[in-house]
Length: 241
Image 1 (spheres, rainbow, N blue to C red):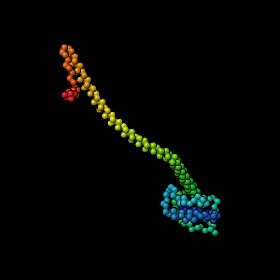
Image 2: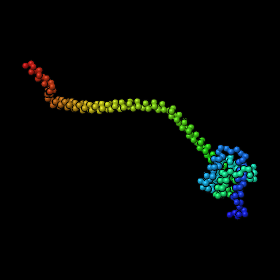
Image 3: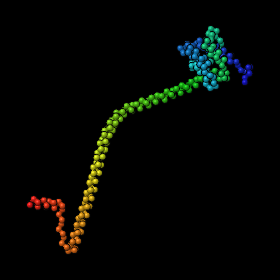
Image 4: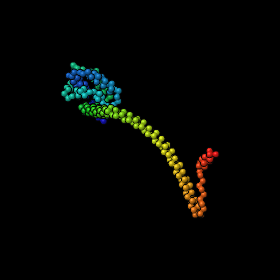
């Protein structure tokens, strides 16, 4: 804890800052953004809470204004012809009322270097974001070009697919008809096989009877005419009578 004899009051260097900032400002032409930068700075200081990281009030000033305020070639004498402007007095009044530990413990040049380093880091971050966005835009453009080139071929393939679906449906119907025909032919073939087997049995029985008759020595009985032959013979006799 510094004693009053060792620690300089905040008002002493504030007066020096008032002197060289006022004299330095008189040597430079004001730009259009100067009033906005210095008028908006006090309100932003009062709206944002102070912390120990990077929320210093000097960060609201642009680089040129900070360099002008903290340059080494500025005389330290008070200029009687150029009194401090109201906006400078407002900033100093706010800084006296709310002293920040970094402003009392560090020199203004260190604060300036820290502010410039933070701004350069933010600028590099913005540049990286812009590069990433540009790469994404190029990728989107490339993909859109590929889609435009492949769209006609996709439409042609869709048309071919529809034609193949129609042919496939026709083939399925034909296969179903052939399957029904095969079932009918298989049933007919099975019936023919049964008829052949029945005729073979009849023929085998007749042969067995003939062999039996030969072995016993009996005359074979005359073969009986089939019913159709007998009926036709009877019809012929009736016509003759």
